[in-house]
Image 1 (cartoon, rainbow, N blue to C red):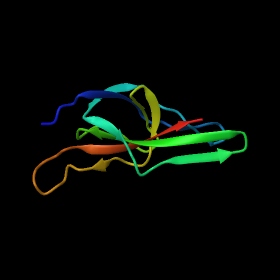
Image 2 (cartoon, rainbow, N blue to C red):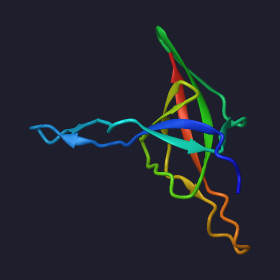
Image 3 (tube, rainbow, N blue to C red):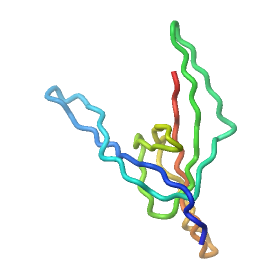
Image 4 (cartoon, rainbow, N blue to C red):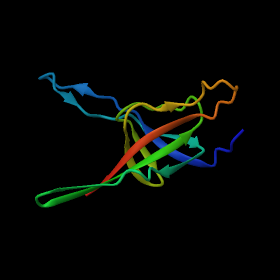
Length: 112
């Protein structure tokens, strides 16, 4: 069994609708989860420039045990930095050898 040496916070995306039926973004309560760790996604580097504003985005992969929640747009606090999940988690628990290492959750951090 791999050690769960790190912790992250997770807040599920819970959108609602206003009186005009427009989607209102909202997130649930932060919960603490133990994970194996995380690492930057090195093939991704993005700087988007708009007049008067620049944004730098970073992708991080969280390596988590099976059963860790996570859906598109959920919020994660990784190393004290708030990030938003992109897509669904990649599940590596269905391999042919009986080893269930866990899941990989990709999150995006934006600065600027």
